[in-house]
Image (cartoon, rainbow, N blue to C red; front, side):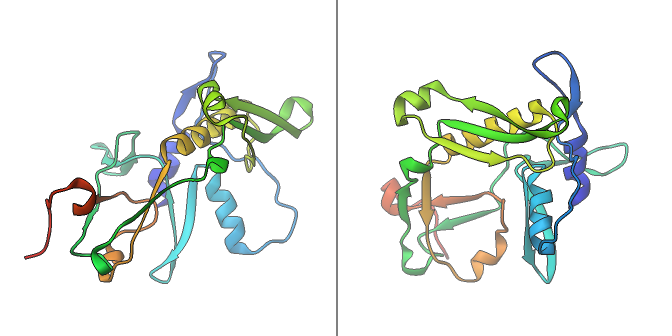
Length: 209
């Protein structure tokens, strides 16, 4: 799982000042004791990833897009393209046939992200990059979220992290909840699934035979 993620992380991106750097880089000295699994989660956060336990193994995934094949090496490679859903849930394969919808709390919809990073121009002392969306400030008010870019020593990488967090909260404003049986085993964390709800669409488009 790590190989396509690291390929994506090592791709060069152009910064606002015209310079180029790897999309994600980790520059840190871990000097304190911590639970190994928590350290793995912190390291995965460097490339917008997450680690989870499944099939008796620690797995790694990330919000990077779909995987394609590189003809020269046959290796998996991630792109920014939209992901196709891996499974479809409808009223016939959820318990009770009911989907529950709600919007995310307005308190969680940040309009200003403060990202802390280690500034190499100031002896790697903590510095802050502020990323704001003025349309969201006008709509939801000045809601500040402070995050730490783990292992980050680039202000542009910290800025990209803040922009991703801001857009993720802006786009992911609705939550759907439901219970299912063995169908739930076909979807893993970070994967995309589709929902076809007869009660919401007003027509039955999918079902079981």
